[in-house]
Amino acid sequence: MSTVKYKIKSALHDQQLYAAIQNASNLSTAKRDDQILGLDDYESSRDAAREVRQRSVDYSPRLIEKFTREFTALGGKVYIAANASEANRITINILKSHGAEKGVKSKSMVTEEIFLGRALESAGIDAVETDLGEYIVQLAGEKPSHITAPAMHKSRQSIGRLFAEKLGIKYTDDPAELTEVARGMLRERFLNAEFGISGANFLIAETGHIAIVENEGNVRLGLSIPPVYIAVTGIEKLLEKLADLSPLVKMLAKSATGQKFSGYFHLLKPSREGEDGPEEMHVILIDNGRSRAMADPEMREMMLCIRCGACLNECPVYKTIGGHAYDSTYPGPMGSVLSNLLGRNKMLHQELPDLSTLCGACKDVCPVRIDLPKLLLELRARREKPLSHNMLASGWKWTMESSSRVEVAGKFARMVEKVVPKVMSGGVKPGGPGSFRTQVEKRKSQVESPKSKIRTDDEQ
Image 1 (spheres, rainbow, N blue to C red):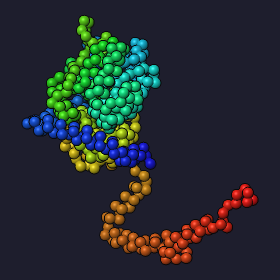
Image 2 (tube, rainbow, N blue to C red; image 1 turned 180 degrees about the horizontal axis):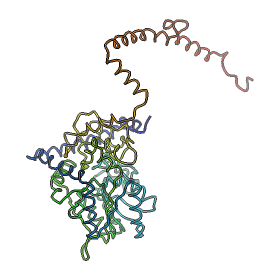
Image 3 (cartoon, one colour; image 1 turned 180 degrees about the vertical axis):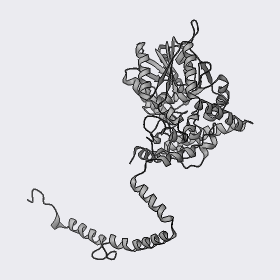
Image 4 (cartoon, helix red, strand yellow; image 1 turned 90 degrees about the vertical axis):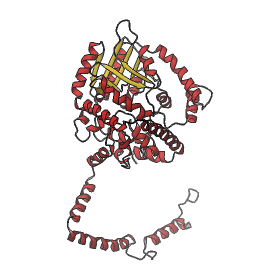
């Protein structure tokens, strides 16, 4: 049994997981629907958001070049990482060059994709997650189960038990009390952090800005106090100009969390002398299969994704098995596609495209109109199939192309239908003296017979 199938089987028997995912997904969907109903220009806003993202993909190399030039001119540093290991190596080298060993890290799916946390730990660098959901899964030693709600799979009772075990506090399952405990633990880390790491929602090529939306304020703390700040994001996140942010930010919070607007919106750039901010600001742009996906005419549409997570909240498969069953950084419909485009190996997660009913709900809620069902079908068609599968398919096609062949196949099938039962029963009637069942019963009686018992040492 594959890891994915094993995890699916386990998830289907976990009633607590099912209840947690259903409640969280349904709440997110209801909040999103309330926001969308209040928009008179929802469909035109989707069109505008898609147009902006399409330009990002179409002109990616030029935008990367322009952003690098502008950000560097402001005093920052930009690195292009071909893959995960290179991105991790660059990050570790930056931190080691400053002797930085303890810092803070804000929520970032790209850093989860490249396993940055694990790489930092192996290098002796301690980076504490500061987003509450990410902090919870880090304490639990787990992966996020949702791209915008990392601890969606956990109940408040399980979080209470986790905090009691890991942080040594008295058990409580009150969300407000648990949040206060986490804030108290993280406050000290913020004040003594030697570095800050975050992702980025978008990068503005025209001005060299980093755009980040969040709800907890930890990104601002993570770059205000430490002397070194590193933003890690994918090369598809480049936008042409500041004006391009408007339709995307308008759709992102509504689709992701059902808010009119996120709690915090940051436009960051390297600070000048006398300004608040880190002494050094670095941006690591990761390819990791993205340029290959952008060059693929059938799959490049996936690069428009703004990581809102709306498709996960609507997917009947995700809502039944949760995110961990996908055994990938990116779960749900978008993850089933994206996981097969990123990294060094094509179709590494070949089972994931099957985790869809193709109902189309993911396409209906996508704020940039990505046709996820079409992409899932394309990945299914590209899958490597065993020789026996191809032979059977070719044989079936050849047979069905001719009525005479169909007639011969029907006669053969009827003949097999009569012969197979006789072969399976040894050519005798069921229950007869030579039948398989009778032979089994005879052997069973021989084993149970006193004469056939194995003698013990005393008997010998």
